[in-house]
Length: 163
Image: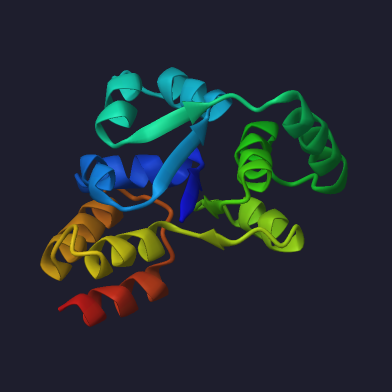
């Protein structure tokens, strides 16, 4: 499976203390260079190193991907342009988009791009034996305490399942 991240999910995982565990997933992991730069600007954290340790490859959108980006921007007004870079990369790579942004999720669904969020990814890490269910529950608790934008009702369901 090929996964393309937007900033929200990567920040969630960092807040939960499980970002580096991504490297053990049997999936190809990517983030668009524009989104990697956005992470760097938003935070004093060393995102370049964090992404490398997590096994996330930074990719530039090729010219044909840029054409797709312009098309997406014309049809989807709600996601910001930086978020649309993640969607354009996921579509170009024929991968799954990982986002916590509701507007970007709706755009991905409209484009028929597979899309999941942080909770799905934590559960995938549990299913793959990367982390234990108790570790996923603890990571999610940290994310919620950090006031990350994770659907609370769904988070409760996952926490109950992992306990």
